[in-house]
Image (cartoon, one colour):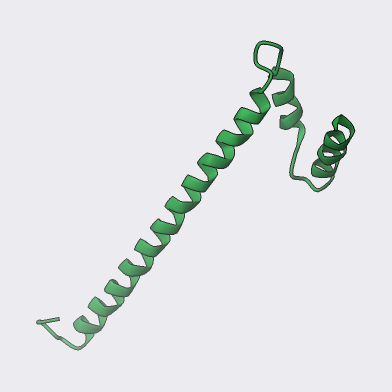
Length: 83
């Protein structure tokens, strides 16, 4: 199992998913905190999902603002006071 984990880690480095910071993170793990790396990676992914969701919501909001501004510009060009 350790050999398989080491192989997976090498592949992730090779594919540039991991870098030297991951090694530094592993160095912080010790007997008092044996799951440190796992916890940090889980936090990263949890935060990433939340942040991506926020970006998606912001894009939806930005598209709506753009649509409303375009409509407003059309009303102005037409001199449509009611619009």
